[in-house]
Amino acid sequence: MGNKHITNKNVKINENTCGCFIDDLIGENPEMDKNRKKELKNNRLCSSYENDLEVYVDSDTEKVSYDFYMRKLTDGLPIIPPTKEKLLKFLHYTDYNPDDVITILPPKQGKATVEKIAINSIMAGCIPAFMPVIQHAVQALSQDQFNLPGVNATTHPVAISVIINGPISREIAVNSGVGCLGPGNIANATIGRALRLCLINIAGAVPGISDHATMGSPAKYSFCFGEAENESPWEPLNVERGFKTETSTITVMAAEAPHNVNDHRSKTAEDLLNTIVNTASVAGCNNSHVPGEILIIMGPEHAQTVADNDWEKEDVKRYIHENTFLPVELADRGGRKLDNQWIIDSNVRITRSPEDVVLLVAGGPGRHTMIAHGFGTSSESVTLPLTLKDGTPLQSVQDYKNQNNKK
Image (cartoon, rainbow, N blue to C red):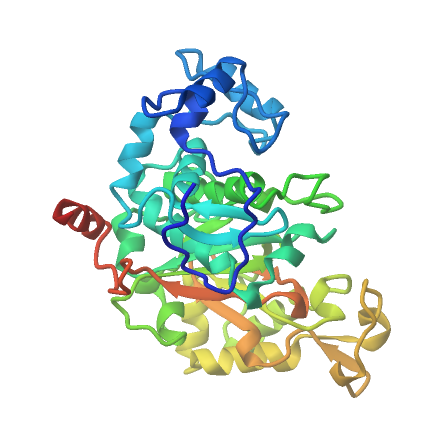
């Protein structure tokens, strides 16, 4: 397979990594050479791995789904068979070629081609218009500061939270309101799941093989939502990170499953934030011995209570940073020895600075906030703008179709 384009020039390509096309997977490539056809007749999927078997997509989708499961190509849930027809629809929403390599994903060093990203997106149940978001999310995972090798291999139950900002979030109907962290929305459910399938099938993060999480986490199935920008009294995450309001972005963050903060009584910003910091000050989280990022998803009602007291976003982040801490005897119980630089007056803050507090607004009615501890100093969140291949900011997912029509 040719590598016509690699967006991350610092990665090393493992030439032994499987690079099959979807035509190979379902045996529909008329240009396939005779030896290749003979190989597929013998029920071989590809030449890279001898234990791969050919899967013929037929009307029995239940059988196909189970075949994929038995070959450890799923997350345990049923999948949508990735047919050639479905693949072509997804390729309308990218201006890359199918065999262009977006990045290399460890620990398997798998080539994340546009085609393989699309295949996993189909399997996850995505609709074609989600393709730009998933493609950029995969690219974000490969950034050095995210530390995907550590996130994939750790025994810690860290998942990948996907946060979508900007007009494209609204265009593809990402849920940022009631139940945004739960079931019921196809964008939230399948975009997050597609990313997980890419990690399993391209990166090789198969539970018990390269994914060593002791117990795992339900957040590893899907952890994707949008920020409720119109409900927030503060600037949204994409603007905070240097992008324009109209620039759509994707943020990936290594985070634990979210934990609820229930406060229906507090009337002042300080009282409410004290509830949040006391909930977040948990012995045993990674942040307790290796301070790092924490995700604070504040419900609109909580956010309004804080803003009504004239607290700006920076004030909230600073207060959480300065007041979320543990006594050193509780903090120093993690897998890594506590560095003395984090000890202040016999306490350890769970964040290194206010910038580690990833604060945004989402959710519906109700006086709730959700917190998700991060992976300590081992990973930092990454925000990328959604762009065309030439770097032009994406105004709409339909921009890709316009680009393809010019070819």
